[in-house]
Length: 229
Image (cartoon, rainbow, N blue to C red; front, side, top):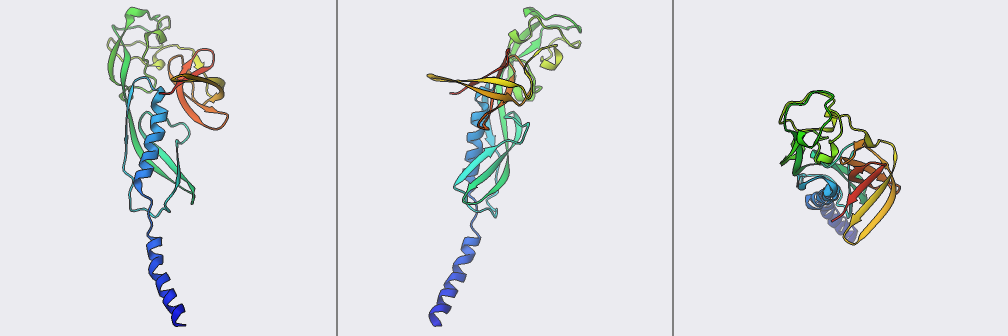
């Protein structure tokens, strides 16, 4: 009986320590950063990523296999919230705030444009700045706009977005697309489905047959280009 009582006492002393086990925030933040770095590879500019805080005062069972994900319709652009799920040894999920800033070139009008005006090379110029502070469909390449008509009247010096022009879509949400992934020394083609509608040169999200979601550049003809470092 004395041996049993001693074993019970030791067990009671150890159990609270296990009950107070917490998920270390560092692996969660690292998984969010890894996920956003992959998502940002095809963005039109230089991306910087900042992952928000995750409280160490949590009641989560420590995880050895983490997987980050986006909610449907989300993308690596501006202030975002990234989900992280535990696959083993327990199952739980949490949300972590983050911010993706992209600095690069974007188009602005060189002078006032009237609705219906067909744009030429002299109607736009490139400026550099924070793309994520502009409209989500900001245009970044003169080739995207030349030959297309303005949908509305625009003042000079106005950042130019796809919604300002009558641009035909290159890919349409729900459409079957060809996904071309390129990297140093390799090129892989896959079938996928467009998750967003985008004009030529705009970012588009696609889901591959294996369920993986990638961000790339839409091209006419139902193609999406994804670049790896």
